[in-house]
Length: 173
Image (cartoon, rainbow, N blue to C red; front, side):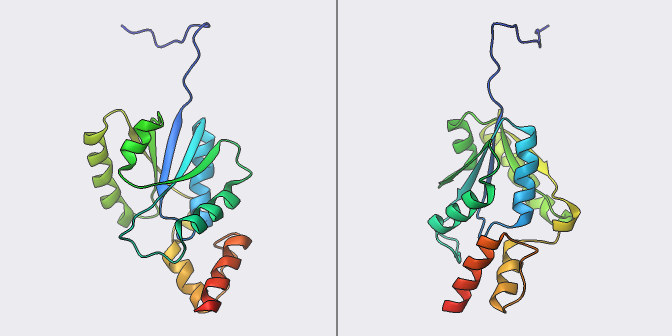
């Protein structure tokens, strides 16, 4: 039987999690998931999963900047961008988990399939599903962009900095 205790002269490896997404833009729902993950893991790396095939409103640089501004007060959170399989990124950064947010049952089927595929690709990297606070279960970046495009009040959905950037984007179009 393995001894589960760590002896006093051994240090424990930090528990690192990866939270990937397109974050176009980051919302309070994303922030809620990040805060929940940061409370469970020693370090959370928010990864802007850059997908050249995906049409986004904001550039990779703009999205990274918005994420950094949004999470600046959470000590154990880092922000970066990456292209490729997130399980590979997780392994390269000694992460033990991929964080996925689930808003509704409709999210589950796709996320479940991805979790099973990731388990086949990297068995030691687990997928952790986190649910946001119920006040964010309807919220997603597409809805925020649509409301912003019509000049609606998005202050309950995104930070002031993100709201300003959205207003700027849509006033230029």
